[in-house]
Image (cartoon, rainbow, N blue to C red; front, side, top):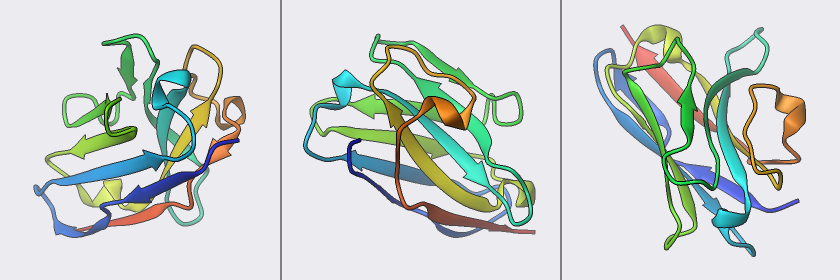
Length: 124
């Protein structure tokens, strides 16, 4: 397991933007496939986006495609999620996750390291 620390959540109006960050400690982010998940109250944890160590190898769930963008900065050992055109239904706790395998997956069970989560609230 690797320590992960999310930041960047907050309250934003519909149509606004936020950028989430996930700092990786103690190891190089280039050793991990990473993902963002979210969980709304009473709902299951939902896969949002994934990123493998291979440059440009990313995937976004249909619900966020065209609005959200996952990226990583190896020099800063940080994963990002740029969220634009936010909607009230995007309100959730957002988690970053990591796995030492060389591919991402939409199943939460694929990941063995998780951050503590950051709250994103989108008002209408």
